[in-house]
Length: 452
Ligand code: 5GP
Ligand code: MG
Image 1: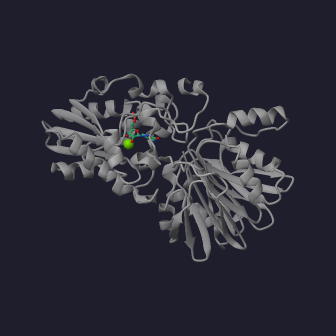
Image 2 (image 1 turned 180 degrees about the horizontal axis):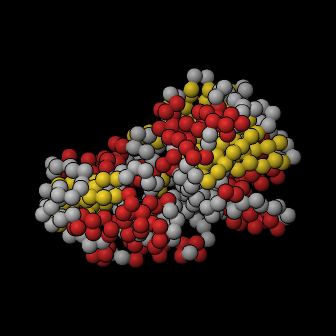
Image 3 (image 1 turned 45 degrees about the vertical axis):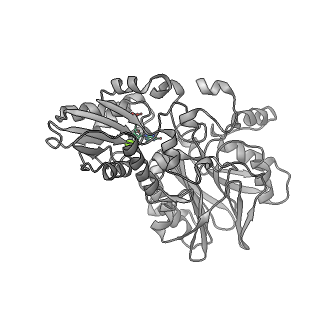
C-alpha cells in the first residue's frame, strides 16, 4: 500500500507535499520521497523511513520549484529497499519524469519480460517502472498522450501521479481500485490519496478523480481525459474496513461513518452477552463504538496502545511481528477482572495478533473473551495493492470460523457477514471489490499467483 500527494503551481510545493505525506503516513511507513520541478528540471529525494525522519529543512529546500509529487510506501510489489522507493525518476529522450504509484499492476511482469527481451534495462523491481518504460517508448506527440498510451497497456490497480518539468498528470485505473482525490489550495490544484491530506494544509476538497480518468495539469489549467472504455467500479472495500484514515472522505463517503456502521451491523448480526465492549486500537475503535452503541453495552478502552510504535503489520518478518503486538498493546489490568468482555477488531489476517491479545485479556483476569470482527473472513490474497500475505498464511483460507475461534482461544468468534458489509455501503454495494473475502477477482491473472 502507498500514499501519494501532489501540488501544482505553488510557491511552497515541496513543503506542502511533505505535509501531505505526513497526513498519509498511515498508508506506508517503509520509505518516503518527493520529486519537484522548477520548470526546467526535476529534483528528488527518497529514503527509507518515516516522513519525519526522511526530510529535513535542508532536503526540502533543495527540492525547489513550484510543483511536486510525493509518495509514502509500504511494499506490495518489489522488495523493501531504497531502489524501490518512490517517486521513481527517469530521464528519457524527451525529458524527465517522476512517478508516484499506489496500487499493483497485474500484468507488469509480462510487460517487463517483453521489454527486457527488446533490450530495456530496469533499475528496480517495482511494477511502477514498467509505466515509465512504456511512456518513454511511446511515439505519441504530447506527454499526456504518451501516458494514455502507456496506461492503455497496463492492467490492475493504479492511482498515479506523474511529474515532468512542466506538467503533472494524475490518473486512476478504470476500475477505481484505489482512491484519488482532487483538491485546491487557493489557486493551486492538489491531489492526494485521501482528503485528510487536504485538511492538514487547508486545501479544499473538490472531487474524486473518476475511475479511468486522466487529468492533465499545466500552465493552461486542468484538463480531464476519459480515454478508456467504462468498466464496472471495483473500489477497494478494505480501504473502508482498515486502510484509510477515519477522518478521510473517499469513494463518496466518510471513512469513520462507514467503519462505525460496520460495528452497528455486527452488533445486530452477532450480539454477545457481556459486560463491556473493548476495541483493539486504533483500527478497531470506530467499529467498536458502533457495536457498543447498538448493543447498549458500555464501551471501555481496555486495551491501550503505545502510539510511538508503527503498525505491527508493517514489519515484513514474522519474528518481529510477534514481538510487535506486545510492544504495541497492553490491557488495563483490573478493569476486566472477572468480567465477560467482547473485543472488537476490524480484521483477522494471520490471527497471530488476536491470539496474543486474547491471551493478554485472560492474563488481565477476563472471565470470558468474545471476539467480533467487523469484516468477513479474509480467504484470498489481494493483487490490487493491499498487502495481504500469501494465501497459505491467511488463516481463514484453510480454517473454519470454529477452528479460528479455537486457535485464538476465544469463547466465541463472529465475523461480519458479506451481506452485512454490503449494507454499510448501501446504494453502491456493487461498486466495490470484495475479492479478499470471496476470491471473485475482477481481473484475470496467471492462476499460479494465487498459490504462491
Ligand atoms: P493478524 O490477524 O495478522 O494477527 O492481524 C490482524 C490485525 O492486523 C488487525 O488488528 C488489523 O487491524 C491489522 N491489519 C489488517 N490488515 C492490515 C494491513 O494491511 N496492514 C496493517 N498494518 N495491519 C493490518
Ligand atoms: Mg488493528
